[in-house]
Length: 270
Image 1 (cartoon, one colour):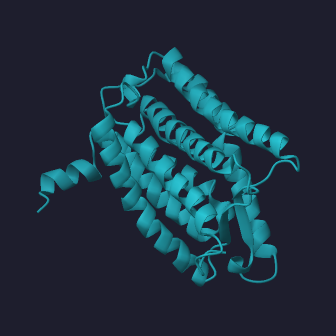
Image 2: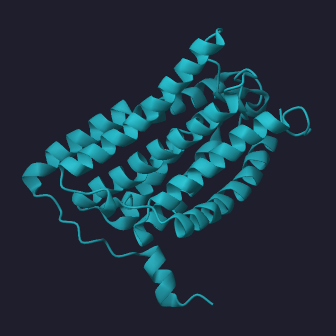
C-alpha cells in the first residue's frame, strides 16, 4: 500500500536545487523561451489548433476524416527518402538547440537526466512507461474515435519502399528526442529558473504537448496531456530523461512499424 508520504511526494514534489534567475534577467529568459517555442512546438501547437478548427468546420464527424502522421514527400523514392531524413535531422536539431541553450546557461546534460545511459534500468523503465501509456492510449484513441471526438489517425502513408521501416523508426526516435528534450527537460528547467512550482511547470509542459497534438482531434489532445503529466512527473521525481526517450520512441516505433505490418490484415486498422 502506498503511504501518504510517498503519495504526497509525487503529487507535490520538492523543487531541485536550481537557482531562480534575478528579476533583471527574467525578461531575457522569457524572450529565449518564446523564440524557442515559436521555432519549434509552440508554432506546432498553433497549427494543431487551426487544424482542429478546420476539421470541426468540415461537414461530418471527426472520425470520418483522416490524418496521416508520416507521409510521402516526393514521387521519386530516393528524393522522398532524402526528405524524410532531412525531417528527422530537423527534429533532432530542435532537441540540440534546447540542450545547447541549457548548456550555455551552465546546465549540464547530466543535470537534466541525459548523462551516461544506464542500459538495463533505463530500458526496463522506458519499456514499462511505454506500456503504461501506450496500451491505455490505444484504447482511449479507439473510444474517442468511436464517439466522434477524434480523427482517424493513419500512422504512415509512405510507399512500400525498402527503406520505409528504418525511416519510420528514425522518425520515432526523432519525435521522442525533440519532444522529451524540449517540452520536458528544456521547458520545465527554464520555468523552474523563473520561479515556477513543480506542478505549474508540469501543467505548462503537458498542455503544450496536448496542444500540438490537437490536429488528431480532442482525443489526441487529451491523451497527450495525460502522457505529458505522467512523463513530466516521472522526470521531476527521478531526474532521468533516457527512460522517457526510450518510452516515447518505443510507442511511436510500435505504432508506425506495427501499422505498416498489420494494415490490410486487421479489420480495425484503416
